[in-house]
Length: 355
Image 1 (cartoon, one colour):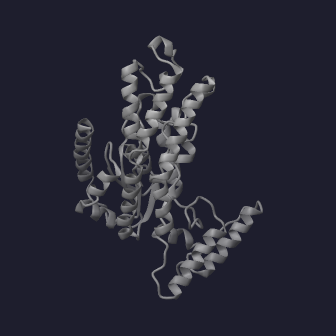
Image 2: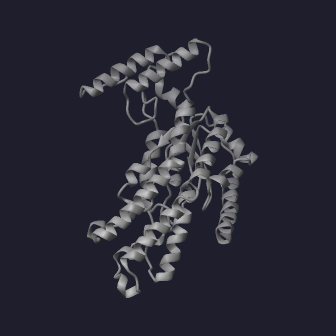
Image 3: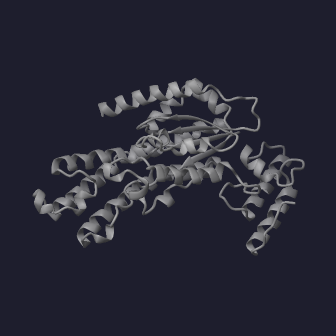
């Protein structure tokens, strides 16, 4: 624990220096998209080799985009709540066009990884998968020992569920103060789903591994991912679904054998692709789900009715830009009609345009 805190302190100092060197957003660059990333080691780029790029760096390469990265190694939801009290960060959030949040994986997975590392050290294994593939008898172990191992990891991964969910909900509540920005919460992938050559394991070992994977999925989905879903429903925040593309690909996209939850360069590229599709939103994609359909037209109609009733309207700047498909008089019912017609042509296999 002490080592983790020291890592966090050192990383935070490095991060503050890098953000300070970057300076504030150029408020005169009206055509530039200003992105603030609030994240943990995933966004910090931990585990990457020299020359490899994090998803944050890849986003920074988008045209007319400036990114400020407030991300630190081993950041937990509790750490983030404390850090959000920083006035300089608040000023950056206030001028952001896009706010991306990536946190929660350390809350759930650090106790799991710490417990797994203890067993590996005790049994003399070098890689996470060795516990399942090695000849147990050579290490004085039995299948029963493996079952106890699985049970112990299960207990560890459940330890912070309630606290992590509560903290995540509070993070989302605080960010509602910046509702002019497009706010994106990444859901959390399962970093142990799955090991390579799983099908080659014996039935007992495969069952032990898949049961652990299931428990991890449940812990994530009942805690931080559940909170992300609730925040989306309550505040309209967008969800960057990085969980789905990582399913069955953990051995490719995560440094799993080193018990490191952070993505490989390939994993970062996947996350960057998901986020790019959301930040660089297509005209007509009001909801930000990557598709143009009746839901986008409905969102425009709701917004138009809210404005007509003298209300503020529930669409952020990115949604408004995507919804103004005719470029005339802002977002209104005429845009909704055009979006609906466009979507109908798409579903019929046509090649519509906005002209």
